[in-house]
Length: 449
Ligand code: ASP
Image (cartoon, rainbow, N blue to C red):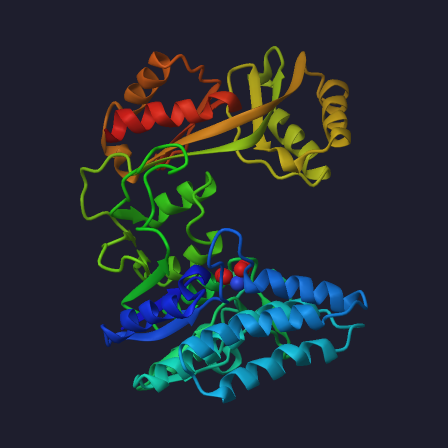
């Protein structure tokens, strides 16, 4: 039994919905269909979720909302008309969209979430009606009835662990259940969304809850590429990735899947596959617990910019008990989260994302390092990129770092720092932001070409 999730671009028009219908119809084990709101039909288009944000802002600022309402309703109408669905469904959607502008504005913590969730909720109703009209036994189900109960954190809901037992009860049904992604219900019976792109999370939660054999996540690419297609021309798509590898790649800028979507499926030991709605015959990328092929060393090369390094040097640092703790305490007191910490005997650097800092925070850090920790030298280095070579099987192989550093040196790229965690899932190089693309090209060529 499979849980299938379709993203916004797979549901943006009647033509896309026809592809979705064929995918669901051709495999009767596809019993749960989780859907996003209609996405963009072309690069200039607006996602329904973004149109709902605009609508919300107009409503709460007391502005005229009629144009936004109309735009959103027409988005659905163009789909229902092309699919020749009964007038009833668009009337229901229209009523729902309009009713948002009657909800109380004050003391309504979840008003924004309620607006946003309407995008997926109405789309799920539309898709269920379309499936039924075309002879599939299907039913729309609201997240409340599906058992998706979440914490009361607006725009950042987390699933409550007790939900899984309730979701498991869904298993006793014959028809295909069409479930809106992106939101759940709080204990106070309020609509609360996950963070943006969160329909992936719903799919993963349902897959874990019903103990699916597979979670299929349909998007508009042939799986996950071994490097960014904006940097490498036609990179190959990765046939198989482990959850750990996926986490590493996602951290360094691979954004095919929502970060948090991995957790429920991983904990539930559910394999996942990323597939293309526009090319469903392509096998896509499988995300598994353990590799089936031990010989694959490197699965992907990722890079991300916008990093900063706080560099410190102090003579005899290695003998000073508590130095590291005191340094991290400075960051904690300023509510700064950090990512990596490469060290030397008398050097310690902390690498973090530049969004964690402000000019004032930087001054504070330097002041504490010099006055309290009495370092000999401290600087904050900007415009750094991290490059990650990812592959769980690296731990059983010798020479991956040698191959990588040789390729970087041959391309005149200065490695500023190197770091590898004990699990050896990835090797990280810090380079100057300007050399990021060149570094990715050099590494892709040496490992994949
Ligand atoms: N529609 C929501 C968004 O655009 C959630 C999703 O598509 O996954 O963020």
